[in-house]
Length: 460
Ligand SMILES: Cc1ncc(COP(=O)(O)O)c(C=O)c1O
Image (cartoon, rainbow, N blue to C red):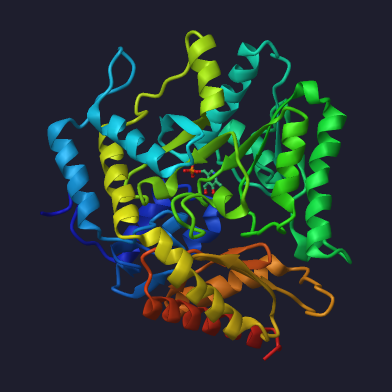
């Protein structure tokens, strides 16, 4: 079978056309045009090949999403079969279809028992848009329409649409397109940068108690929900201290504020648990999901609701004034079913927890614990971050840390590994099917990129 586009052009041709027609994500387009985008043409397992047949080990699972890796025939077959049988139908006209029904049956068999309902979307951003409207609707039904402020965290990321940007805490994103009313933010639980002389446990409590201060400042009667990633992904893969989440949960319960976990990155096995909130031991009222739901083979996201919330919406809510053309899309649902079955039946999640996760975490600590450039190694399962520092003893960070990690990322590409730079941290999140040899290659190529960065800084 051939692809429905011109078979092969030169990389220069692709780059020129790409520059002529695209505005890329989170980049200076003019600078990228001068350089030319890397053209990826094929993937297998954890490997990607560019148009000049250079191989890269994908240490980021695409964008934290190809949990099963590339080239899975079971996912392709599921999509093909569903395309042939029923490529599209919707959930509007009093209708439904087997693919979405079976997806939900499977999804809720994997989730803790207090979740019961899902509203499917095409992406994580949309999942969070739906979250904002659904949470506000929930409080309206309960006779508290003034309870509508959503509290997020500075440097949190919840998507790129207008409201998900407002919910997120990326100041440079707020500056493009403006902020919305009824959103507020608290600090991030980033001990390395902000913990000062406090122990991580003390700092975790302090960071969590910012939520209480914010709720009291806004008035609990006005606050609908606190929304956060269990571990912060795009904001630097920041793992909060153990004291953080139990305190956040206590505060939310005390002030009757919904606790909403954005599981778009953490869901579907990344930490070695099915969902990241299970790793941290708290019980959110809602879960935003996407990415690993279909291993990125086809777009799909969703909002998962607790039974308690769903009961209010269904039994007392009347018409739910929301709907997306592609909500529960049959082809996406079929791929999600195949993906979840593979994660479950091949015991991939427990393998991450008991074998490959500890293997990667140990290897990173062995290689980088004494590295002059690395101040902290964080992570669990198959997600990890290396914190760059100027002075290990004082936890001093480089003033131009983003430039330094960006350089490291470029060295990574040259060494044939894709790792991500975010502020002062290098991040990795390989596909959950990585074996020991692949993880060895990931760590070794990362070491080379970090060493080259340290050499450039005169530290090695
Ligand atoms: C935690 C989190 N939430 C939401 C999103 C947005 O998802 P999408 O890019 O599918 O809209 C992302 C994307 O990276 C994310 O990391």
